[in-house]
Image (cartoon, rainbow, N blue to C red; front, side, top):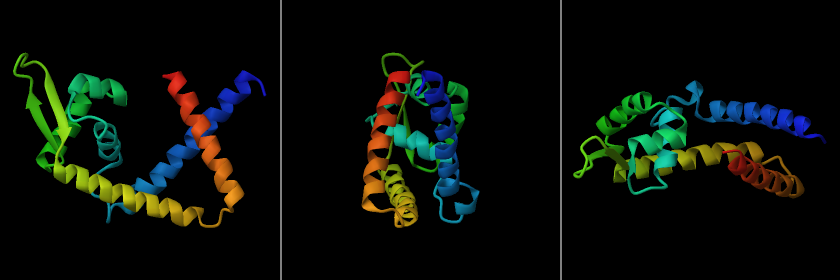
Length: 146
């Protein structure tokens, strides 16, 4: 397979993964969701850090600092995230997850995982192993891209 064909296949799969995410976290799930899809993925990124500067989180998420600030303010209001000014430089603001944010994120991860597991019940073991290998390769390829 040529590199361009691999690139097109990768793009097609991005769309498939995006649709899976929308189905599992989207509007049809609002009754049981604790927060929006954007908030979910922001918390997923934040859980890697004790606290992180706004500008660095913005880079990690590929979102403008102004958009992210609005989103984080809502999560601060809901007590999912805390905000802290850098005592050395007041221009820097750090954000981190509260205990409530960690608990709610874990609940949401469990809910989403159970939906995905339900949908994968029909797959045989060979297919699941191939899927796992493919996802690991995809992760490694994505890491090289950015």
